[in-house]
Length: 66
Image (cartoon, rainbow, N blue to C red; front, side, top):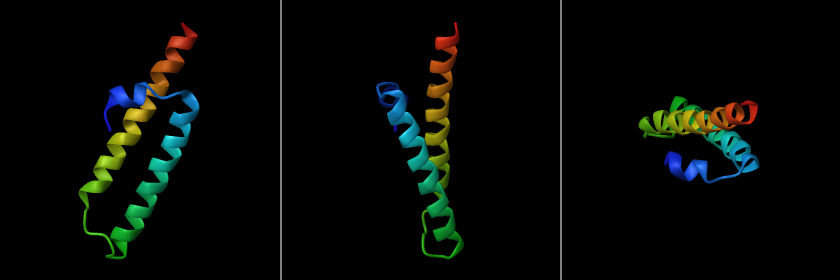
């Protein structure tokens, strides 16, 4: 997911998206541990998406404080 797409979303959508991404990451980790999932790179992609969402949320927080 691109940062531009994330910035277009509202705060509530970002919180929901963050929860979904974290849940997906947890599920992928369990599947890889039990040899049900082969795409290990998906973990890094999910982590990057989580970081992007958190970055946009932090930017908005800092703008509101200023």
